[in-house]
Image (cartoon, rainbow, N blue to C red; front, side, top):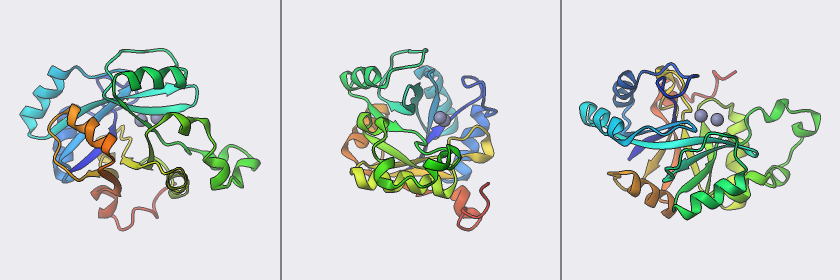
Length: 221
Ligand SMILES: [Zn+2]
Ligand SMILES: [Zn+2]
């Protein structure tokens, strides 16, 4: 089952231009079986998502993207509404209590521009970042990142033995499905999604958006 695990929509993320109805139509065109709406610290209400899913005939799951003191984290299976910047340790404890799942989002976004020292950052050093102590998985394919940045995330995930996910991080409709997560089983609801995440029955893949234009690796800035 092919799911774009990281999408922002216009009603709930101010930074997004995505209309939910256009989104699901494009998702079907991109041969996705499901999408996850991961707004910034706001959760869609279940009735709204179910209505949209029913109308459009596609699976829609809800997640959250939390900004923590250790960077952004995608969270699934956690339904508390927290607005302020979070201490990752506190978020981790709350999510674990709820049985939820945490993914380090775009952990190396911009790492080449952090400074001279970061330019030579080894996988060994990169894997010591605090965020990795508090997550269940690492986003190793993010549609907004360069190949180098995603590569570093993949190598770090491998080194730490953490599973990798893929998602577009789309803020516009024509950005979805650049990276996806392929699940081994069909998933009907959010509980099953969280269960499959915990079971590790998934892998990150380049989505049909990037596959469409060759490797998708030449046109990034
Ligand atoms: Zn983010
Ligand atoms: Zn995002």
